[in-house]
Length: 470
Ligand code: ARG
Image (cartoon, rainbow, N blue to C red; front, side, top):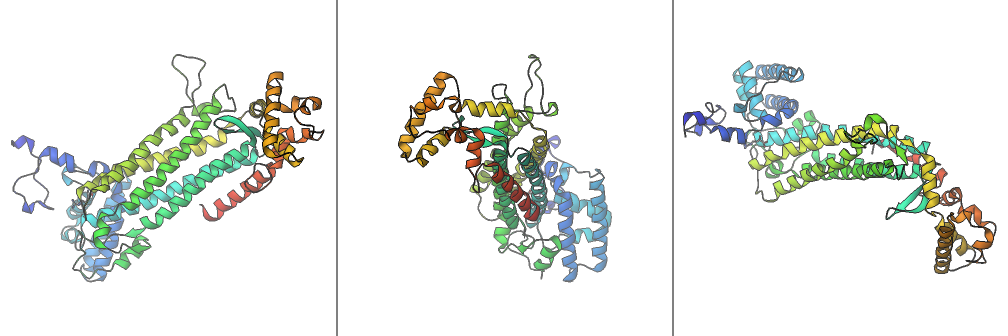
């Protein structure tokens, strides 16, 4: 290997055992600093807690601890000012910070790594980072849910066709539909909150894999860093990435939900449906077709679901062949996690902004419900209440729908005499159930689409959100 292909002299952190410098390509291939610099504030927090613990157990002097606090404080300030400089030779965020600290404060910096390893350090950093990320995602989820509940209340009486097989099925209110979306996101919040409990455990103290010979106080470090518990087994602590996989699974479901909602927005915005309009600021035009207004934002939400699913599969695959304990494979957990969090925060925030901007075209929704004979089930139920067995009622109504189709009217548009051809049990009072409002009002139980139930459901959802956030 020629000199030109070798990297600068290997860093003193582990080079003692090596007789030649690492190849440049290898250096680039193995370094994680180009992406894990994002963990810097969490690495610093972890180091501060570790140093405080080392001083308590007599491994560090009070002067060393002071120097470490000062040095890490300066590095943190640099990070916040956007002046945090890294280079490839430092390999990863842990070495970068440790060396920057040692340059500043000398020997005390070299003592910081006593009783720990980058293996328990990185697991701690990722958990601290992910805990914050989950909290931020939960806050954005709450915004999105709040926006849905508000709009649902506004549209507790707005009629639209509910669909099965994408065919008009029965009337529902638009508010009811929006609250269905809200339920999906409420479950997502529950899942994240549950996942957070398993994220919030402290790996530090596991050291490289077997623990350490220093009399460390892990409970103290856990308290300092706000962890609920310590990881029980050192081998598991450094190698476990279940918490990250769980998070990605919860994240993939969030994106799946947003994607389904986005799909409906896209459909509803087509001129054929014409149920809604989105503000121009969420759409773009076409470079060639002047009449177009494209729902780019919902389409991108739908599209970004692909990468989320990819990240979940990436981490599952990353873990499946790994023997205990730490392996360098684990370094590959970061980019999927970072991108997942960025994607989730962006998508949820833009969705929360978009929802209040939805302009509802209530007339088009109503027309679609009428055209779809959405009250056919109500007519069948009416006949059942008048004593006809349901199967016969179903048949009678099917024939009535065909007659209405042929006459080009909806069921309520057929005169009584004609309706009675299909069943003599039909009387004047039938028109009360054939109207859209009659159909809605009849579904008057918890979970039903009756406007007063929708209003009550919205109030309960708002209460739950305010009380628990999940
Ligand atoms: N950059 C590494 C990672 O992301 C840190 C841990 C390295 N540990 C090791 N034994 N090489 O996983």
